[in-house]
Image (cartoon, rainbow, N blue to C red; front, side):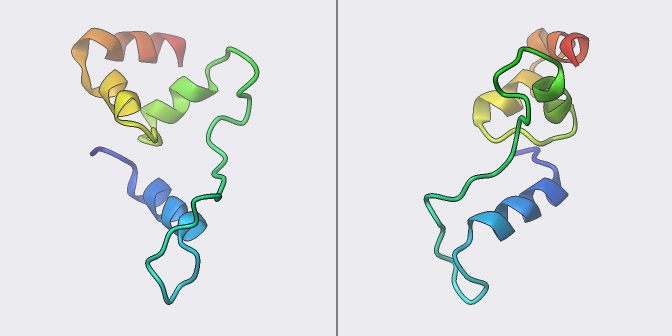
Length: 74
């Protein structure tokens, strides 16, 4: 619900099959965490900028119980 509007626009451009259609490409890949094989701060920084893809990502930032952890790891 709190996704960054610019990130949402990128997702739409990447995932829609053509500009004349609202059909989505189920095989589209979106670069989210460029260091997905390493435990680092990129994922947490992306969450802070509103670039979470899943409801659980949004919850990590919106919940007072976990927001501090995200900010610490970022």
